Amino acid sequence: SLPPVPTQCASLPPPLSLCHRLCYAVGHFLNDLCASLWFTYLLLYIHAVLGFSSAGAGALLLVGQLADALSTPIIGLEADHGPACGCCGRRKTWHLVGTVCVALSFPFIFNPALGRTPATPEWAQLVYFLPFVVIFQFGWAATQISHLSLIPELASSQQEKVELTAFRYAFTVVANITVFAVAWLLFHFQGLDPASASSLGEQDIPLFRSLALIVVGIGTLFSIIFHVGTREPERVGQRLEAGNEDQEPLVERVGGPEQRLDWKHWLQELSFYHVACLYMCTRLIVNLSQTYIVMYITYTLNLPKNYVAIVPLVMYVSGFLSSFCMKPVNQWVGRNMTYFLGLVLILAFAYWVCFFRIEKDIFGAAVLLGSGSATILVTSLSMTADLIGDNTQSAAFVYGAMSFTDKLANGLGVITIQNLHPCRSQICCPQCGPFYHVAMVTVTGGVAIVALVALGATLIWPIKIRRGK
Image (tube, rainbow, N blue to C red; front, side, top):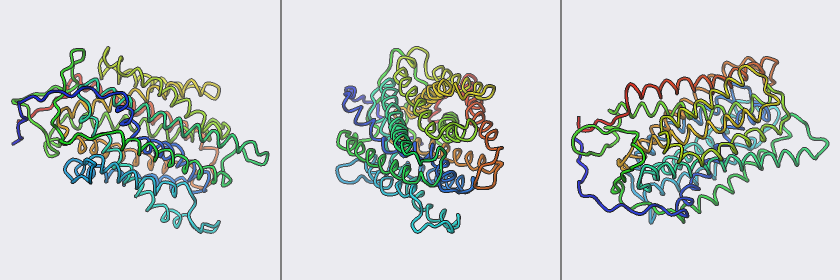
């Protein structure tokens, strides 16, 4: 049977100061910088710069996503129940381990294999990259899960959870803006050389190497700020969630006396799988659109190569601005309606791409995609925090399980698209343009429809936690 929650109420701590919120929010900055490079440029770099086949490029990304997916539940359990290190709590210990793994492995991914020659076979280069990809994804998962699982512990109310999530996502957007701004500057200075090519090729290897080293350096600095400025609560699960007068909680709790859930009981909760489905769809839209927007720009719209930095930059600037509206919108219309509004923006983007040639309107479409992605991502994370509630002792497991579905679905999605690629050679054929056009519509509009069905299901089967039954 489940252990009952103590009925004695501890006094609620004061809300976090702005400084502490900012210190917490930058703790995922290194991950966000590397994820932006990983999802936006890995396929483009491996395929167009190093000359891998589309299947080989997709296989490398799939291995990374599988390593991440398998790591997240294990790390979640360890972060909930494992020992702490020194003055760090359990969460911050795993965050530190992840930061070291990411910082040491990621630069090798955007650097050609040592000893590589034109005669080096593709399979040998893939084998060289695999250990670095696995270490990077393990570290990325450790940092992500430990950082997310701090939200229910640090926040003292529903709205503070939304604010922390919004601050966190705001820095995610800042990280993406940083990557694309640095990439644009590197492309710009490269373009000053009259001998530089207008299309991507091996001449761009130093550019991507420099970009990877710059983002790792910046991200490591912000990780240090997080560890210095964020204090993990000593005892997990002691903070009771504050009541909120202006918003009903997303999750309705049904049953007898208030009881806490551990990982085994989460697996018996239907709402656990419902929220996981919404989170998975959200991540599919955000990550796959980020991956294929540059392929769409390059091979469908045939825009100059500096657009692979400019268009994502516009997306994330619009997402950054929209993230500041999350708190008032959530207060006015609630979680579900906010998520619905984000899906409307995503569907509007998919309609625009599907039925119109948008070379001249690419920036308007980018604003829709960026704003919609920011809205559904912040809201889905808030839904997950609501689901956890005061069960903070198992928060890392919940976030790890959510991330497992996300990473597995993303990896399978990418390898499926890459294996459907009409061009089996290393040089794209005329069919590449229409192919990436269909892929872009599918990963936004198609997945958004699935998410809309899952959201609508909450009207029939409300998200409830049934304890002690």
